[in-house]
Length: 204
Image 1: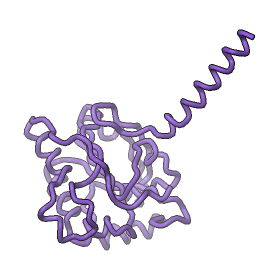
Image 2 (image 1 turned 90 degrees about the horizontal axis):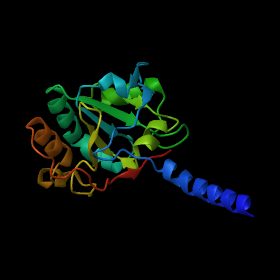
Image 3 (image 1 turned 45 degrees about the vertical axis):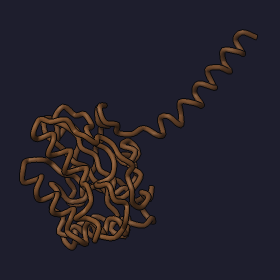
Image 4 (image 1 turned 90 degrees about the vertical axis):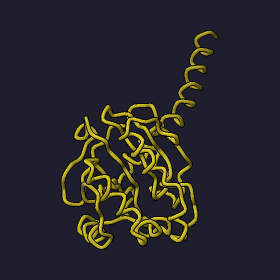
């Protein structure tokens, strides 16, 4: 009876552990999840490649109205240009699975990058199996993460505090990503380290 009871407890603990593992996410204050993904030009990127550097990671879906809000207005490209110009690395990830909205073959992804005037540090990373997106807990497009040179997440969440899809609201919005990067570069504390990401669901 005792053996059977202990087995039942072990199986119950295992059942509880599975959802927790499935919901793994990049959390401010904790080490960023490791990743290894190939970009649209065929180059592999890993977390270790960015050791000692500031890194912004952004999730993208060309068909999402919220992505169109920030790219159609030039807001996202301006952020990319400003901060990559200051030596910060910026990766844009597509986690859409094959057959799902937002999925792109490498050649098409290069065309979309060109058409969107992408100013990231590399062409789109193509996370078609969703491994990187699930490891970070990426739920929406856009969903933003900032990783410090020590490999820890310092910001996770929305690009700003206005979840409207209307680009007219951008000038009056509080941009969390810019605020977090500016504070970090000045050696100041980040006032908002996490927020609820808004946008379209990632199509795993």
